Image (cartoon, rainbow, N blue to C red; front, side, top):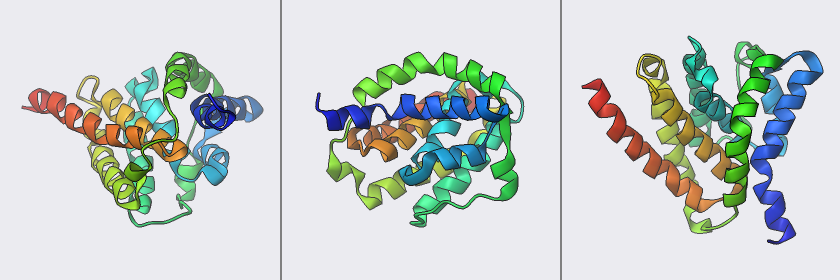
Length: 198
């Protein structure tokens, strides 16, 4: 593996480390902290971190899926509109979790993050076109709008979180295969959700 690929595929674990460090610095991790961590990575971490939280046991806490949905909706709509810099209301930027809860979630997610980092790399550039990214963002908009309902459908928020996480990581790494996976996972998730709803 080349050094360039090593830097690319360390993204997820690096983001988790920085999120955890932010919590240890002041006792909590806010959305503003995540936005600061994102830096020149753009919108990727702003979708990745909420997506990871939705996959983790924290999604079982009442109202957490709804808050995640609001953040994902705001970020995804701005990606669809082609904004380079993501704006979030101050109330959303101030929302956060205690360092203890973040540590617990990251301990749960780190083994998965390590496996994903070994898989993710920059490839299939044709699949990372502006149109593909905006279509994937529309998928995340639909998921975000459904997040409040997912609070009462078992495991649905975890499936939604997986789709959002994969999209965030695809944006960060430029991985076209992962971007394609967003659409595959979304269709698979619909196949699981429809029988539960009906």
